[in-house]
Image (cartoon, rainbow, N blue to C red; front, side, top):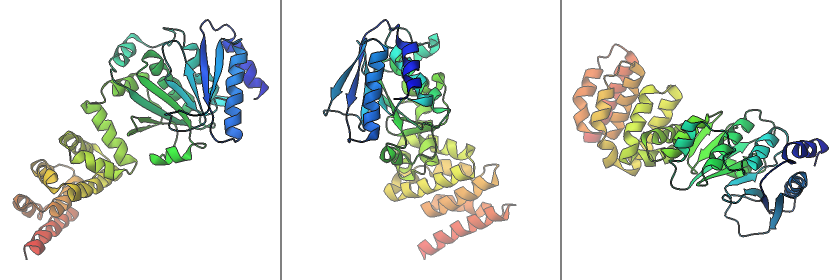
Length: 330
């Protein structure tokens, strides 16, 4: 424990007005586990014992160990799988202060939105000790968890829990993972995160989920969503708006969805035909290629028209799609 860290803890927590505890759950007997244990004891010392330390060996449903859980009178939903030193010290201190009811400084609108979360939701924030943006995201999630005990917050060190990070193919930090599925990179406002948590069964959440799966290369999971009705409108909306790499990922997901449920994808043919007339020639070409792979005969007249498209690559894609039909029928 660095003396500077202990001094900061004493300065900020000596006048804490509420009691609570830090539950320390041990993991492998290594430097990280020992450092986390010492940190918990330092917090207790800095608060004059108002925050006690409860040592536990097992019985944890947490995603990894070792870990610290900040526990208050009405909540036990903020967890640290990270050593809160350096940049990450301030959000941890705030989490302790948030044990005081009503302390978390949220706007009236955000408080209203986060109160709409009525079923448990889990938010994991992957951080690095060297990341300057990570503390801001960590504090945002901690604020929302402090305002609603149904929101469980996990602050996770991407280096000490590399296996967890690899599950989501994380490419940078901060990375926020909602309900083990929706991955958001970079900074996120309290307003947007609260809205996503409150609308996890609504279009906004579905759109962000699909985008994150595509951008993370998790096309098989995206394909599962496409095979269900609620994912079909979202995927076409993203396709129309996306850049080259997003559209490429979506096309891969479509092909995987076609293998999973051909009937479901063929049900989207009328909507895909509309995209054959899109003003963006790149979209026309990509959809022509996809329709050739789907193999629905109702698309043939439209593809035939596209063989005269002023953009050669679109005409070529339409011709190749028609060739697929010819080969299939031959």
